Length: 152
Figure 1 (cartoon, rainbow, N blue to C red):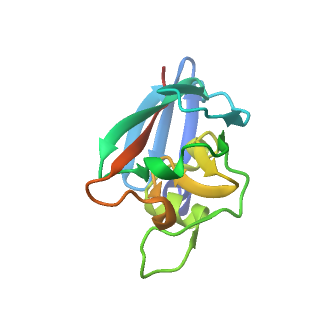
Figure 2: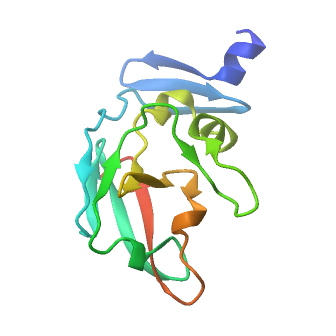
């Protein structure tokens, strides 16, 4: 195997499992990839089924998304389509999700099933990456921490 192939990610299905290589890590996982999900409205329920798993929305204080920004507005979980941008630091620019997913070491074959939370048409959260600064919960205030599990 050439080095650039392993760095970009490599997945070989062998029966019911797959041998995976990404960057310096090797592992075995079930062969089936998560089912591509369709957009779903989130109406405040504690869990929402997503791509063979679920997104849990956990109440917190001073963490995650400010709860006040989620009440009475249209919230939707969608898959990535490309071109999305997220601003993780108040003193930095919005950055492409593709780059942020690479930096978070999320293998390419898992990226298309990741849930993205949109609030009133604005990207608020990306699984494995974080919350946009415009939606971040201030210290001491009620928040919601989304958490995606790839298996239900």
